[in-house]
Image 1: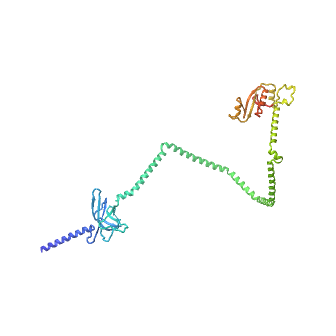
Image 2: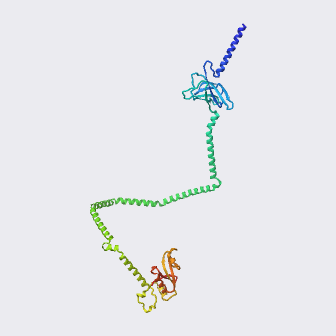
Image 3: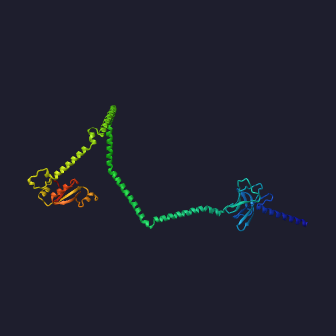
Length: 417
């Protein structure tokens, strides 16, 4: 009786131990009645992954982590052994095992990213492992661009502040004040200009009205004289018709004939035919006229300088030079033998000679007297009128504008003889 009771107690204890063991393994994800496939994956860090952590594919639980061991103490390599509870499930070659966070508290799990491949991993193969960044890493990754943007913004703001300090600094405050004052003055000037324009428009509005009324009257006059304008246009039209009826072709033909005759005549002249042709080809007539003109000019000048050769002088002349002038004061001074100084001026004109003129090389003693806007260049001055006359006769052929001049009572006179 006592022995049977002990056997029942022992059997119950063994069954309890078996149930406890099965329950613990069940909680760990182990299923004794279902076959399992083991795979391995190596990581440099696992980020809080523990044994019995779930293994998922696209969020669906397909297994669990069985064992985590440190395989390389120097490099810190960690080997994770995980099981797939579906014996028919195959993992394609190239698939990746990634440690992920399943919630905000940092609970870790394994996510298998299946690859598109024809081959499959074998039982107990080692798959490449990756780890997803934790919340801190994700926050850092999200905040890094914001941090960089903030730093760039702060640098830009610093540059702006430096520029503002330069603009509004003590050295530029006076310039800014002057600029604002100039702008204010400009606005005041614009206001004054606007007021002036308003007053001007009001003042000149009467003239504008008068102009508009004149334009209106002109328009009315043209309207009233429209019949006359129509008549004028009709006359122009009739004149045009009359001109159209004229034998312009005959006129053009006759004009062409006249032009042809003129062309023949000019050809004959160019060839030296006829009197006009001989005159145009022979320059003897031109040379004769030129020689006669020069001789006549010389004769006139010689008569003016030496009138005694051609004009009889009475006994009362006493051998004096005859002066022909309308200036009675000058004639009186010369006849009374006043002490006068005479200047032999080779050139007299209204502008000065250039300093490099050849006449200064020929006459070293050439001097200048300026009277008003006239310039007189003289070589000799004398108090003897006859000597002055002889000097004029000496230079007259080389300098046709030579003349004899003198001062009388503060006035400049030309002696004509």
